[in-house]
Length: 248
Image (cartoon, rainbow, N blue to C red; front, side):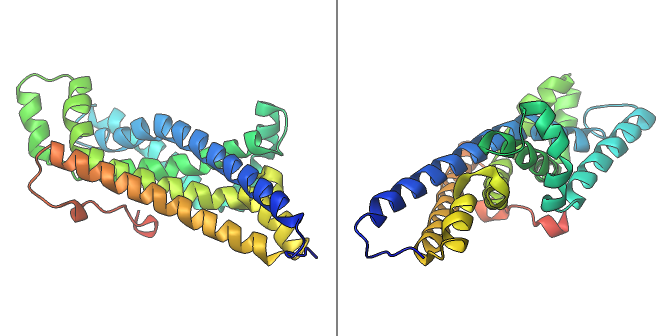
């Protein structure tokens, strides 16, 4: 059992927490970046390939593509993270050479986050006024112009708030990855909190995770408000709510 009154405790305490925090931030940042790169176009495709969608695909082709994408997204969201993490061990080992450490932990974190973020983007895009698509189409806009000049500008505030929700989920999942050797704050809580009975480490990990979540939410809220004002929207920001995962 660790003695917090020992003068040698505090330097090691701060070093361990600092290392764990940096590892958590690294895993979250990389996983979130990959998630945005893949999940954003995936979410746009989920809406655009619907029957009568703005991407203008034929009914049959669009329906087939939409069903395939929807199946993949639903499959990814239906598997519990701990099961998904175990199932991905062979793939993770093949991809990065190991399944233990902060690098390998990014693989399951990304796989679990992409389907969630894709649904977030889908909901945000569906909030865009359909009349804007009709107007842009009547002016001869291409599909790329529709996405770049209509979809993204109009849906961006909601997407930014969805980024906050997704990043928060990744942070939570990163703690679970840490328990099985992924590093980060979850590993600190396991190694020092459980195995060495240090309540100081457990409390510190909880506080740090809370602060990280609050900072992400605050930053994304501020950015979403700024984007909302820059577009001159008449409706207030609270109308843009991160989607409830249970309702997606």
